[in-house]
Length: 336
Image 1 (tube, rainbow, N blue to C red):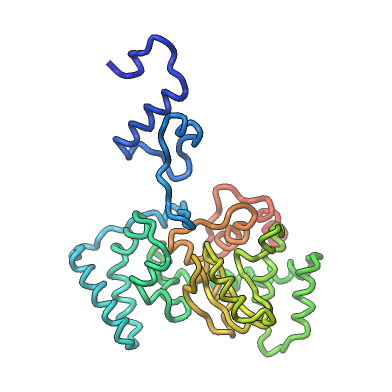
Image 2 (tube, one colour):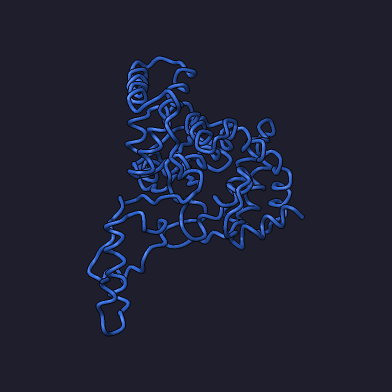
């Protein structure tokens, strides 16, 4: 006879939750998707506790990025381990061979993806085990996104998608009356016209958080969780402090939005990769978006995720399950 059937009185909510959690502990496959489980108070009332995840890490719920790729035919865990050892040995040699690195990163992808998803691997450990991610201005971070989405040209497609929407985006932002956005375009008018495309791109990217509904609070300014710009007068020490404060992936630079002196992708308190100071912002943004997939990370919460949802929709043609109002309104304005 079941535990429930033995009761002569109605079963209480606490008893139901207790039974449910015991079943899930015995049969983990019965648990729901991440973040949709039992009410925390009810679980605690049943005398059980949640398993705590690693600090500073949240899993990204994306259909394609949650898939663990199968081991290719003719390969095995042993052959992938051999390729990983070869990759590490080559990286220590300081030699340059882009094609060999790409081949070895392709060959170790199923092993790497399984570890990142199942063990919620930290960024420092991923970079330690796969050094190419930190090299070449994000080239392997972008290549990894192609492996995950099974779209080899995805980073180039993202740049092409940006170029398609760029004229309308520029025109829409120039009409915007927000003082922060107007200030960016006034500064743009005074800049050297020989680099106008890159400077306009920086202007567009820096303006997005302002137009997508972000609000300043006591600890975070608009755009800080997307592109943190550290004034040159604050010095290199302050830039390092901002890198160390980074939790979710974000861009960190010194100078101003239009006068970028140093630019990097930071996450979990460390530099992931660096970019050149010129003709870099679009490549940096594509790499930033790719890093969320690669590291299986969640976008920042609340209004701070709007810029990521917008970019994912525009660059990857991925409509969200629920479009934030600010993003929907801005897209409508662009498409008028």
